[in-house]
Amino acid sequence: MTVTGRTDLVDAMVDALWLSLQSKYAIGDFMDSIAGKLILKRGREKPVLNRHPWIFSGAVARVVGSPVPGDVVDVMGGDGKFLARAYYNPKSQIQGRILTWDADEPIDEPFWRRRMERAIAGRAALALEPATTAYRLINAESDGLPGLVVDKYGDYLVVQCLTLGIDGRKEMLVNLLADLLQPAGIVERSDVSVRAKEGLPEVKGIAWGDAPPDDLVILENGHKFGVDLLAGHKTGLYLDQRANRTAVSHPYLVAGKEILNVFAYTGGFALYAAANGAGPIVNIDSSIEALEQAEKNVALNGWERPSDEYIAGDAFEILRYYRDEGTQFDVVILDPPKFSHSRRDVERAARGYKDLNWLALRLLRPGGLLATFSCSGRVSADLFQKIVFGAAVDAGRDAQILQRLGQSPDHPILLTFPESAYLKGLLCRVW
Ligand code: SAH
Image (cartoon, rainbow, N blue to C red; front, side):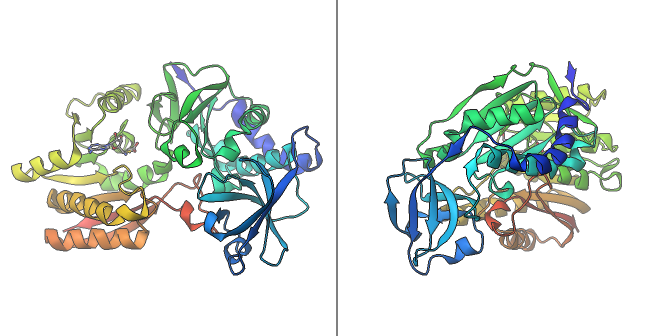
């Protein structure tokens, strides 16, 4: 078993904070020349001036020069004035992703290094916390690195290249990460369907260094999780829920309580609740592998919990079964996958969330807790609250919001890019 605690990687991250000041003038040998210009339609400059990082194809009046996909281009207003510098992909609806608003900032290796150092420095508090060895280091647009996601799992990094502009620079970016953080290995998990929108296939594999061991274990707030970086969901774990796992598992909320953990994956919420004295926990997920890992994680943490259950199947069906049987719980956690994938299916997604919450509300004992989440970016926090409200009215239950929940702070939301806020949740007391 490989338990990754405080390591060279962590020290390197702290150093990066200081390096970011020094390397500003370092010269690298990677340099992109400006291959052309995107001239925006008159009246379509406002989002760029407000530092939104995306240039939609509909805002582009014409392309000057002959940039090829992935090239760096200057974005000009309808009046011909410089607005920003972006990488270009005519195959995507998002034709440009802005890298800088500074006309004097070249897109060379020091540029990418500075951005990475800034993102890493933003996680310095986490790096200094030995009880947590897995978290997001680079959150794409929100960290000024559109299309690039980097997560840390102990001594290993996982990269996701979501766009063609990033994909084409992968080797340089991976080498930079290796240089900055000295990981044991870097895994690529670019097996995500959004790449199709960029004209890219799904790929995964070892991008640099060693493959992670089969028994890799990371720590989250002191809790051990076995994690498969090549086959697990996302980059291995749902790191965005870390802060919510803490919020929902306060001993005052869970000690001695019967808990239904719906969409359990490898038992994230369950492990925190178990650590804080929870009574029996029922874990539901459609993935048998995930539930097997959830059970192994309990043992990894040194617990014996013979009363816990792991039920593989469709959450909706199982909740309906419990409703019909009159089974009740003290705490229900609902952390479903994304229900909405495009603007067109928001209504259908809303109905799904409402059904799910309606069912869960029916299973709660009076005074019980509902922790309910949505990771659909298109379902806003306001809309989600309205959905849960509708479900409570229909279920005939009074519900009070104790806490509004969101994505963990290593998944920051860029103020100028509200699209980066996708995870929302409500912790409710239900009567
Ligand atoms: N709560 C988890 C993350 C859940 S992600 C954590 O803290 O780590 C969503 C999970 O829902 C995935 O594990 C996926 O396998 C599962 N899932 C997707 N559709 C499902 C369905 N219809 N019924 C049950 N589980 C489902």
